[in-house]
Length: 101
Image 1 (cartoon, rainbow, N blue to C red):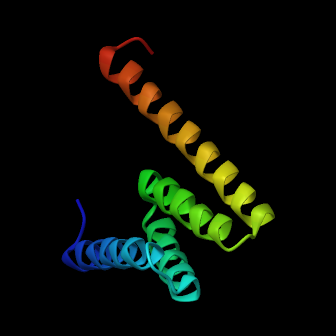
Image 2: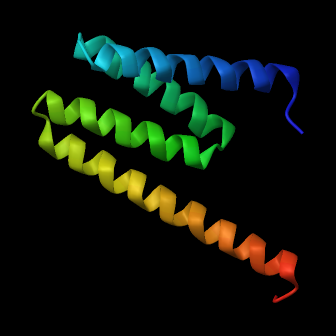
């Protein structure tokens, strides 16, 4: 179970992500990137893989808009790999719960 401080940190990361999403619609991209990267670091530290993948893909869209295609591709690939890992872990948990393994 998450502690109160973890809950607050998680909410702060969610708010950073939401603000970055708003800024992404109108710029400035530098501030948007900073917020997404800060949110990403928090989510990674918390081990929230699903949220990490969402933020990676959102950050990739910013890089794409800035014309930083290599970085956008890297982030999209990371997001895809993260989601594959999440899906694999979810499937493994489901098998364990069903008694299949």
